[in-house]
Image (tube, one colour):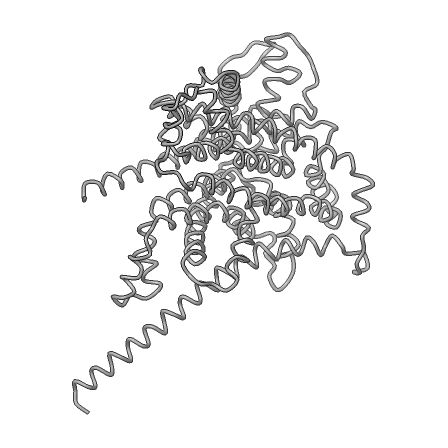
Length: 564
């Protein structure tokens, strides 16, 4: 055998070995992704279902369900009533804000987007905190301005605060639907003499109907899952999610709380499939858009009563939002003595006295989840979209379901799933990080999938034709082209990790407190000044990180433009 033939054979062997290693590495990555989804999403859900049927002797029973139906029927009715009212109010406010934002130009639209985004990054319980300070027995508006003394702790307050809290996200979603409407169709309607009111009534709103139903559905599910607002301002009118919290925290009754969670879990799963059907319907209605909206050229003042109601509704929402967060910010710098307010920094000194470790720990956890969660979501989206994965529809469905699941349900599932050998994680930071990551996976994966849909697979095939392995294609071709989506995922994961509460409230070890739970404790015991300071700190950190990422993305965009 000649030297040349030996060299050729050696290269062939090396290439074959390289391909084997690449395939093995690719298989390992896929197994990690699918195994993570099964272990950290499906398994906790199954544990809840199994625990809800378990009797004291280890057998099967329906005692927990009968107990819930007989003793907590009022809480279930309260949950349904609050959910329906919140869904209606939130959808009205969201539609109003979306229409107002879509019809604004330049600075007006930018201002609306800033207000909506700022309202989204605020930590939970802020609405309840502001509600008590503004409309409580000694509230700034009810008592000091209007001279009223009334009981603010009722279901009406829960509906109002949930509606204000849920509106920003729904408004941004509806704004995306409006921006995808075909501009040519609206322009043609105007050219044919259609009035703005007719265009809004006969074209815009019918095309938005699936999106409006999605908004109502998401608001209803989020209302069912919300425990903080009913616990703080619900008074004696307790919802089912609040009862779940009380059963776990107060009585450690996992059987009864699991049965309660099943009453929340089953509707959430049902609504999930309705949600997917509605989203497909919405995409079909806007799929034929030939030119996207740069803004809706539709003056609301000329759209009749619907337009004026939209302006009034959006104005009410933005005013209440500014009032709410302005109140929280000012409360951290004010003290009252005999009804006279004065400036002080004592509340901030109190913050330093409790230590900075909860805030630092929250930032560290959020950064870990932001980095790992972004990479996991990007890889999962790529394998689901680009590879022929067996059971792809099943895994995609399972991975999307945490978006619709109540946070408390997800947290209890983790307690049941990881509180015993061989995988005992309770009391560790790992279980908290894993819960955050997989609770946020659906949204992160959808962000990455939307970007992947715009990338041509030809680049990947070209790289493979040139000898690049599967993992090399992902590293050198796919991920660099997904940089904007990765930055968006990072921001989303960081923000959600800094402000999440319901999903991890049962998983936090007392020695590993996070800032958001110090905030909840302060609101719950009536220390509103300290709660305001903590809320301001959390919001400032989130906005600072988002601003930094925005500057980096803008710098990267300018660099790309200069290269071209």
